[in-house]
Image (tube, rainbow, N blue to C red; front, top):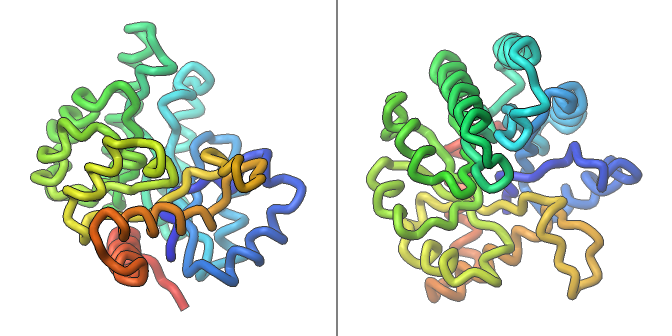
Length: 257
């Protein structure tokens, strides 16, 4: 299995990051870690360099951090992305978040930042990983306006089933994580999305399985999503694993062993 979206840069992993990656390598084919803040850029690239056929990365600026990054930092991040394009598999996560950011002027700033990251993805020919929380319509509208229909776009932790048909029509992918256990909407999305458009993710360290004694989530939790999708679609988990692996390899152009 491949975890197409997690955050290995987070503080939860600081004490035992290297040991954990070696452990995960025994059970997973690959991990795509997401550098969501400029401060994590060096750490992200260092992990990709150390584990070149196992840890891959997407790089962006999470919309939640729009108040923390000034225009100079944004420009420097875009420059770093371009300078290290061969080490980066995707741009993101980027998008819109109206759950954490309520003020209209900051939401406008998010939209400006989003368009800048779409532009760099198009310039470099990279796929995009999209965050859209309480902002799905605006997120999709901007992607369509910027010519991303039938391009490589991954709707990360997608849960807005009312626009699923539009996402599918645009040829985009969706990723499903452990939250499928608790969400009826995500279970319906897993049922109704073509299997060749589904990827597995964990968004770890979030979505810890507290009932299993986890302090924080790990990439191994992709198994939860895989098994639940298989149950919903009346398939063997191995079938879901095989197809979602193929999807991730194709989407990110992963160079595995």
